[in-house]
Amino acid sequence: MELEFMKGHIAATMTLIQGLIDQGTVDRDKLDAFFAGFVCQLPHTRDTLGLRLVIDQWREGLRSGEDDGVLRQRLFEVIKGGRQPD
Image (cartoon, rainbow, N blue to C red):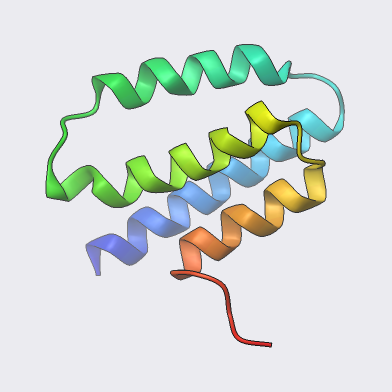
């Protein structure tokens, strides 16, 4: 139950952030730097592993310059537990 609650909050937050990127309101490099600092401050425990994985996966797309649609798709794949079979 707790993990599902966290996933919902991550999805909502990242969707909001993704909208800000789409509008050109948020700079990708500054956003990546912010999340790098955030992840560094998280305890490296099993409890935070899911959150760290989601953020790291998403940051990878930010750094590589993936387009916004791909970033969104990747975010939701990670939140849902991996790619869904075609």
